Length: 440
Image 1 (cartoon, rainbow, N blue to C red):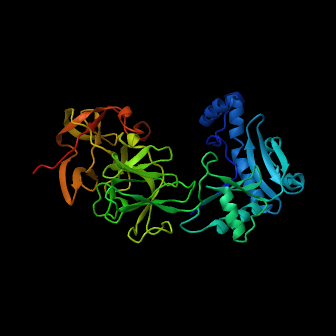
Image 2: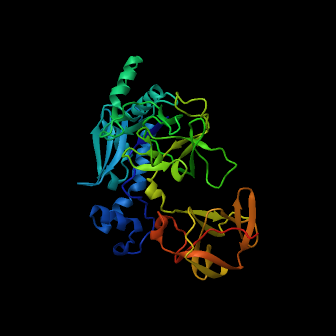
Image 3: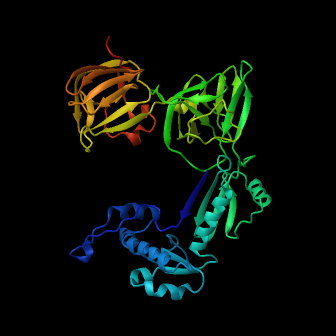
């Protein structure tokens, strides 16, 4: 696996947009909303923040023009905000002469600073591509390459730089002089740069295979929820929750994860030794599915498909329910409602009764936004929209918008769910629904 990134700092800390309005009187020039956040972050006046924002389009156009027209000398452009606001442009050779025809905006010309560089941006990009190709060993070594225009370098990040450089030298390669190699985590240098499969003795004596990814900075953001299963071949699988027809995934764990087998069960632990999963228990993780990628030593008994683990919480954090948000478009393309589903059904602490309505695109009963339990899905093709139970090849319409309903569960706040304060598309109060089952 490899990840290529180019860090050309044309943007500022915040999202900076151009204010395009024209005031009738100079003293009443409107302040762009972004200027307030910028001014607060950097400790400048609103007027100064607004002035800088208005230069952003010109700065972007300058960078694009230099990269397109002056590739033989242009080495990059970036902003510096402190101690003085300036646009730094780097060149190989006489940059003052090269940039002069481009400085048609006096306000921009006043804040330009020219600096000397050893390598052009084009040379950095070529070196980045070369080292990425050199380092790529599918399924084994994972590297990340960045172009840092401020240091005029290509930064290659790998688990263990010394091992990587030894491998490069043994293979007869020489890294370009503008390339520097750094570890992913200086405080936690990996013992290897390659993917591997550890073997553990299970409680019944069979071997448990524990595949680990190569150390990498790459992140994957899809989600997988389900039960961690150990099969008769010693493979650890997770099947998507509520989707019995899907293939389960063999998990490719992080390079610094481990497995413990004791009275607590078969437990997966992160680099700090904290449990993140237990065989037989439900778990939730980030990552991405892949049909074929696997460590070279993966046994044939665990053929995949594979799940490349991304972010994962501890078991304690996973136990806090989350709420996923699903827009419903009905028969058109416009969003007609938003469906909030809990990852874990709420406890039956009481009941809420009333008419199920859609108010401001939110499913509500008696003023409460409903947080639905697992196995409950919206049918946006129906008119009115239906609430459907779907599990184990059973599909049953529970009720429809406009029906009088009674929902067991309890009143909830954003503090009862992980990240609900950020993810909720509807305002409270919230009612967490307990498990719903179809009537026989």
